[in-house]
Image (cartoon, rainbow, N blue to C red; front, top):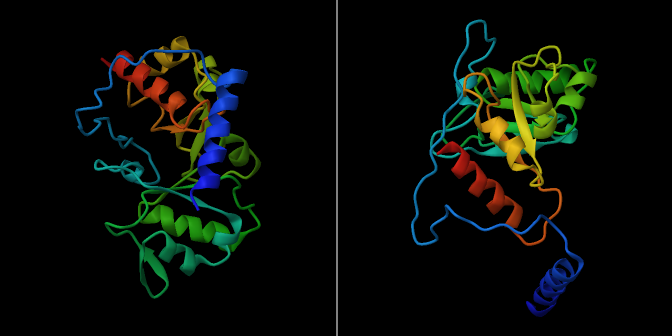
Length: 221
């Protein structure tokens, strides 16, 4: 049964090598494959005037993000269970096994009272909502986290949509060292709460990810 998947993977690797897919060649300088240690970062800080407790967007022991669709919002109690929340008379409560935050590609319209109520109940118990900035511009959501492409954020001029209170950046693996350096130089209280990987082109299973983490380690040192 493993022959066909292995053949497909081998063909993919051959095509990537012969056609020059992916990113420019780079050399890892920081990763030690013989040492295992926990990555350390700064958790989001609370600000005066925040409508929600944003310290729970991430978790100190590792963060779980869950993708949520419009169809998921149509069945709130089922969604809460899928996210690992405890239910009390239909209301969700965050538990140790509950997702820390959710990501939506599409935000329910203002007229979708049920969908927005389901999201608000999650936000109120510390499960935060991340969505692309374009989706939030089309359908503003109070307390949301706007996801912005890193290059656009570094270029400046990005205004948060109405209701959004934090920003996250999306990196696709093709960013230059200069762009990453600009991100690394921002104070944690002023910058994005998290960087989400959305690899644009893969020349191997993890090469762009490795390049980003290697550069991030160098710049953070």
